[in-house]
Length: 259
Image (tube, rainbow, N blue to C red; front, side, top):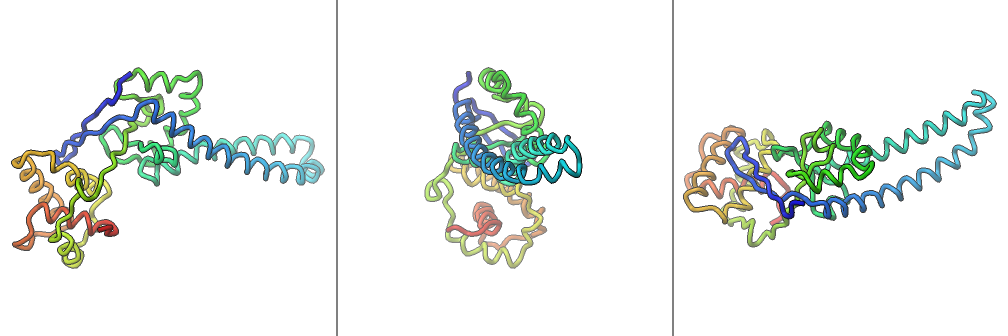
């Protein structure tokens, strides 16, 4: 078992990002929470369906024949399966790789290259989950594989990482100059071409810059600034705006300000 197994990603912008893989304990906790939510949901739906089933069976048999009850049972089982898989597909696609259980356990799913998962990856993971859970195959693979992947992760090209919580005041300090400039930036530039992946790279740099050497920090911030300027078609920065202030302003302007 690999405790606190860490993995590094190198983005196209040459930003090296390091994460801690989520261990079997965190993943088991997340799955238990998700299954409690699913169990409650399925019980409610099953109760509703049983009432409907009782009321329409006699009527349906008289019209469609004696096999109508079997068709209803098949439809109900198929519906429960879609709810089971749809739960994981929906949340992992629209919650940046997290389900309610993963959010509580502070873990999330990403692609092998660090990018957020999409519908295809989430669907593959969900469809192969029953196979992973039969005979505890998934738990065995997570425990003893280098990247802690179950069958669904191997097929989808994903890994599960720990979400690092960061305090705004110490690790993500935003300068007063950036707080002022981000309003002007929204007026002089169109940030809509920036993708969530671009924003994630900027955020990771701002989170980790304090741990870099001065030379590496200056070089990387300048490179990221040039990349972002190219994306948003902003040729020249105001003379008093340095690279770090620009990236902080982009971070603020891209999202709803919280500072």
